[in-house]
Image (cartoon, rainbow, N blue to C red; front, side, top):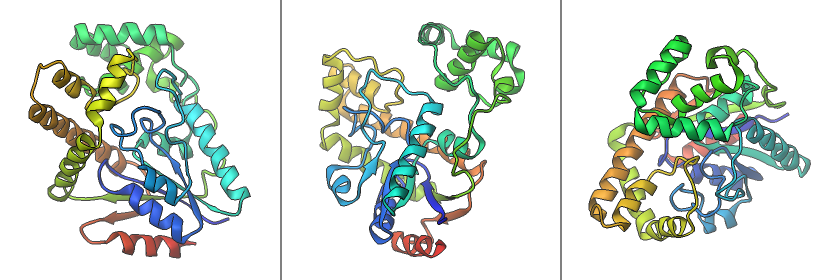
Length: 302
């Protein structure tokens, strides 16, 4: 069987463009591997492929969930396998592309069986975090000192999730990881491709993309979510809080854009830290390789 090319890297680096060019030259279809891009109604803020890109190459698992729906990592991995089945049955090449490191890692290693969410516990813990995150972090240190070393106090999502798992299962996260559920049935067929770029090149790209997103209707996207009173706390939508403050005349648009830029840089840094510490087969530094070079090299893999 041909290798399943899986392209990952930090936000703003150009993963989608490379995946699309590869798909066009390799009879491929793209499967999104991004926990934010699965939702409808936030296509701009989560940097989903635009309509022209979607028209160029078939995409899967992009913008298919309503904003009020939630999905566990385990469920997402099952959907990825189903889409691979479908694409292979049509004699085409599945190409994975995204920025959610946990999903890529879990394709090979599986994910702990307690991955389903408990909304009641989560909402309470999220409120506790807003009230006193230091207290919440101390609780994690007490119940799971091993896992607490992997969680930063400012990473609300991971801190709350660790405590949620403990309350729901009675076991700390470090022990739950021993309860591994089924990995992808294609776990031996992936070729993981890590794209990276030095900050002095990546940061201007991020800045330019944020400005493009603002000009493309991101403010209106946030306004619609506010007007419909939709709870999107389960989505890591960078820019929602900042643009909400602008819409409510609390900060200027310039300050909102600057704050979004800062948060996006921090997110890219966390992504790179995750990716560089985990397994990948090929690494391309975009300072040394053009997009065309990368596509040509990836075609030669099979």
